Image 1: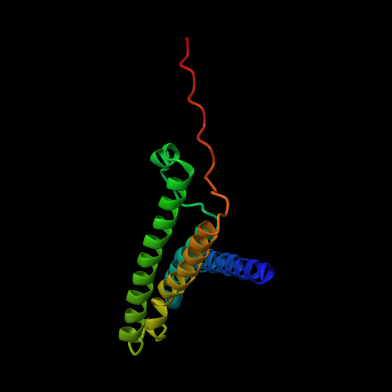
Image 2 (image 1 turned 45 degrees about the horizontal axis):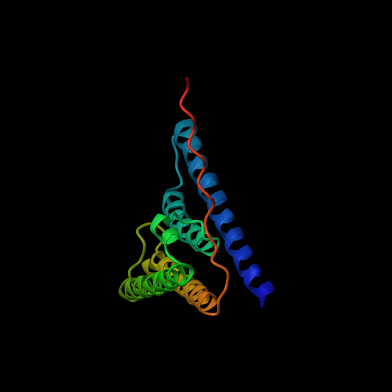
Length: 170
């Protein structure tokens, strides 16, 4: 099971890299064409915009799995172990609700815009909202897994310890 999950996140990283490469090539190529040859590729702006949206949501899923989002845990550290665990489980459940709402809203946007063509490419605008649904489902699975792991007594994983304050110069 770990190999499947790790493979899934490797695939997400590869897709994010492909989105970034696509954006760089299309935007740079369009700049060269505009200033060098007074031409442009119209579809490049639309594709790079879509790639940016996908890149953002793919990256958010990877960072969520790695617990890399910003967190403030000063009050959490003052609690006893059972209190800290309880607060972390509660926070996972609250984030699960938010991710579920995010999925539901994205899904509604997909349904509403499925028959609307994009301005240049003519692709379905429902696909533009698909990364939100992808993020919502992936985030819900991650939150459920984390809540179950904490309920079973799994290790409380903290972000990196803060740096020591610098001494003032004398």
